[in-house]
Length: 288
Ligand SMILES: Nc1ncnc2c1ncn2[C@@H]1O[C@H](COP(=O)(O)OP(=O)(O)O)[C@@H](O)[C@H]1O
Ligand SMILES: [Mg+2]
Image 1 (cartoon, rainbow, N blue to C red):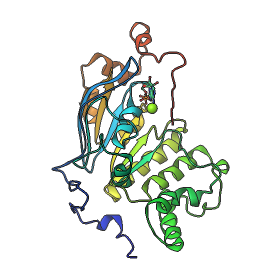
Image 2: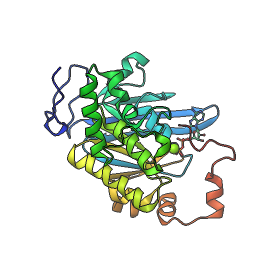
Image 3: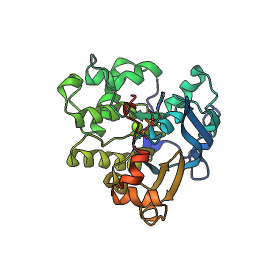
Image 4: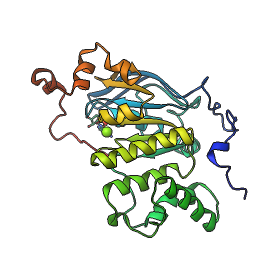
């Protein structure tokens, strides 16, 4: 078994024999083409069209309940559109069978909103889980890769701890180590800083920047944390009322004249307008 090359030696633009386009500036890493999604009569996405550029961190901002997590889940086929198409590296994935989805999923790391670690497994086994599932690496090689991933997030040495013995910030880091263990091309971060104090939140922002700069991984960060967006975003898109209503750098979006975007960025509550978009009582905030 030849060990994988370190990620920075990954041949740029290599074409894999799996129907996916190369990773370069000429090919969007993700494409949403007119994606519509409703749950019953609740319309969540009403025609989202968006190309995500490789090598960038795109932040999706929007109020809670806007459909940010729903949008992310379409990228890995956890949800399928009612209408429209979703592509990952040129491969149409919205109509793939579960079995065929396993190939693109190997290239995508997902940091779930609630970390979603296995409580009964120690940190090492949690982080190594995707290797056990998707590779035939020996236990020794797996342990080496786990240590490398934990070093990246600053937690090497905690392999034998249980998730319940960790702080919230450490659990996020462990989940992030698991998300990068297969050396993905794209990492999806669902509210990576929510629930963390400002210092720990900034530690996660640092890691997002480090992964993007050092390993050249593309990212999609879903958040309503404006500080985090400002820190990590190459590009910001705002999802509101089922559509993308602003798109640009953080400072471009700050200059948007869209009434909702102006209000969201100023953080000012407007009882007349905001009560209309507040989540329905009893609606699920998290479904991870
Ligand atoms: N699997 C599901 N079944 C039914 N409704 C869902 C499901 N997933 C999300 N929703 C609803 O879709 C809306 C958008 O949810 P979500 O994407 O989680 O919002 P957020 O922008 O806060 O991440 C919410 O009203 C939520 O209740
Ligand atoms: Mg969400």
